[in-house]
Length: 456
Image 1: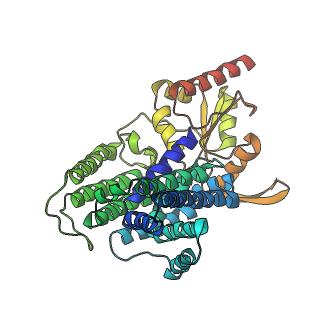
Image 2: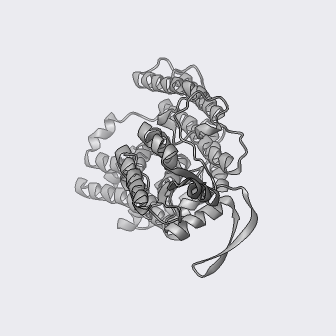
Image 3: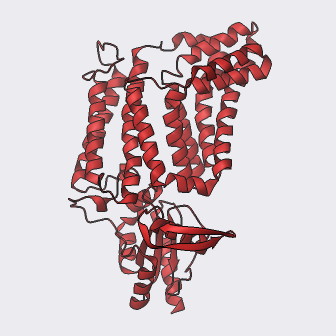
């Protein structure tokens, strides 16, 4: 289920944020403050629990505000917008450079100082809430890129509650340690002390942010047709990034704020093994191996110049009118695939479902497959004017045209979105969205084919 995936992604992001230098040192400091502020342990625990709840409320409100301001459909459009992806690419590179130690990204100190003074001058729940808000601001330089990536992923699911669910998962993971250590304060003594290992975590996040940044650049590259980041270029960069991460974890690469590494700990060794193994796993992709594990991130196979793999499915048409005309001529039903260059789940479906031999056979032989990219930035030969919700809008790009077709004809706006049509453009059954179950997809295709034959 999409909401469960978003929640778990948020929760994992929160756990990751806990290990950053901006958050980890705050745990013992904050819990000790509550225990000293309230002499009675019961009140100290109540305050710490309220503090954890305040963190959840702050992030939940942020998620709801984002959805309320932009709306689910606008968020989905934003997640596939090429300009937005370029900006997000630059932002993630900036964070990665900061994590590597080139400079420190912090919010204005006046903001945190003002909230600190508010926390000191107030009492009770209000004071605790301001303290939680201070944590959110202070930790922004480490949590910002994690939250940003999470919100983009939640937006791509096309769910109204997606950002709020993601933020709830993130905040829940972030708040749990503060509450647990307040209830069991003796655990604080067994916590690893702040030190060089925290900077190692930050640098590791820098490598991961750099890898993720390329994914967002790839979306813009595909949408505008620049072809500067084809699949093999993308894979080479990822192989180098994760190989360097492995070298760094083994202590063979030292950055600005790193401490001297006397020996390699067992966790670092295992993480280095994983990083090297992942780099080696991607090598066959340079010759066209599908690489299902990263299909959602890497550019599609058709962008690769040297490809020995022949199992992928290619759409016969990328134009609705041309595809429908051909289908009528040959007497076949049509499958419309509303997709997007920035659609993660579309790539997952293509790599996990379409390459199944039975599905591939039906798509290539029983249907005329038309793929319409809703974020294609190529200009239309002529700007089209349409009426939507009582307003006149202009469709300037090919993506605008296909996005409007999906909204107006089929009442949907999220991708992937599959619909089966007869030669008159009428649906042959219910539509199909993201679901990687091959059997369900085959039933969907067979049902449409049976309905088409019954109409003949």
